[in-house]
Length: 324
Image 1 (cartoon, rainbow, N blue to C red):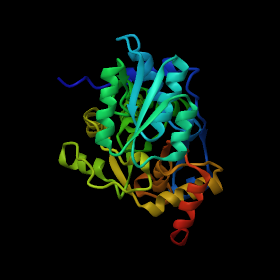
Image 2 (tube, helix red, strand yellow; image 1 turned 30 degrees about the horizontal axis):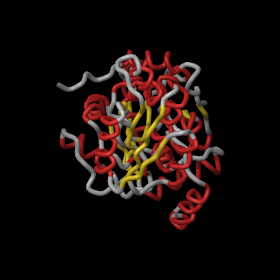
Image 3 (cartoon, rainbow, N blue to C red; image 1 turned 45 degrees about the horizontal axis):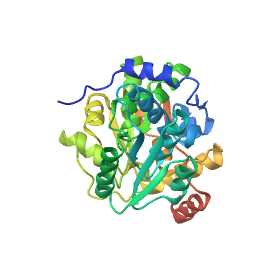
Image 4 (cartoon, rainbow, N blue to C red; image 1 turned 60 degrees about the vertical axis):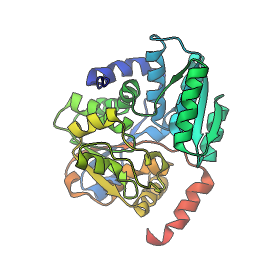
């Protein structure tokens, strides 16, 4: 039997648990972006969240919720990115050991951050091998597996970013957010439509990883054939839980080219003085190209993360400099 989907009330409850723990990240304005969009833009800066991304919200909330249901000695997950860092910090704060299984290719910058937070890291050659190793850890060490996105408590925690945005700006017409596995975006849908069912929620997906768009078109979860986008956090496929939420709430998927992602990173750096990783910049691209459906609207944009090394940032910027 499928697990029940989370609701708006779950997001509200998560906000209470995260109060004083997760940062209430700022909501910023930019006349430049207003002009490019043709509307009024509000940026929810989750790149300034603890561990540099929204993922901490879901990881911490899931741990708090699950520690009352069954005993466990170790927290386990499969992640090579921001969920790994969020779960490592959440485990540290709550007094648990964390074991992160990272499939190749590994982002060395993010691995170092995970290890600095006290987590054990094991690297496996493929995602399937990583999943199998993680399940072995759970069984052998009485561990608790926290899925990066296909988990009702994780989704509710991620939804608190949009809930905070709407508390600051309750009259938004639209919300734009990146979508990969769908944890952040599912939470955004629940929060937005819990506040106002008329809000339009738009997902942003790299052109080189369009499995979410394809899943919604086909009516079932489609696994990506190849996801070689620079937005590494958006290479994952939807889960059954996130798919179940998105199909009932999403308005449209904006397709974003690689060049647009880097252009958004550069605009954030040069004009907004914000550092964004590729996944965190994807939702800015439709604003910069002036999507017609956003014109004359009050638009909230979730900037989901800023975990990128300086060499990688400038390498990407130089790689696409001729097309910007």
